[in-house]
Length: 187
Image 1 (cartoon, helix red, strand yellow):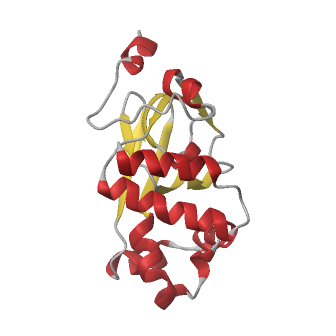
Image 2 (cartoon, rainbow, N blue to C red):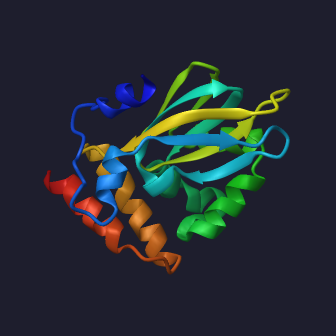
Image 3 (cartoon, rainbow, N blue to C red):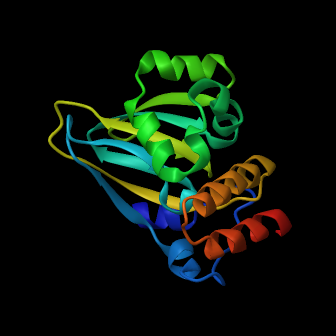
């Protein structure tokens, strides 16, 4: 039932990436997601392929902050120095930030949203957004299902451009990302 629900889930503007390497599996796939219980599970990063994602939890709770990468990069230099010029440093700096520092980023124009996802809740992460997640105690298991997709939106494409630049600056391959970006801009 859940597989069929996600299989036919298609928000407006979804881009069919079946012709990109690995794209057919991406378009047809539905993934299980799992988290370690608190205090071990804390995550800072992007969704797989930095795609948009919907996720439903079957067990447990997750506290998340999702951050618009475009606004983060735009204001970061003045606030934390050139921290966001490559992926590893970006993750390192954000993982060390406390609530007051995140609030300062927000106050200075970084768009971010906080959500607490519980069993049965559906959560949405826009493409190109950074995710900070913490599993919540006392749950011994946190599992769910997720479906990723790409959309043609100006916000999504702009955020994805920043990710391509971050990957390039970090010495990572961007061939697939550039093909996806081209599809976002021309679909």
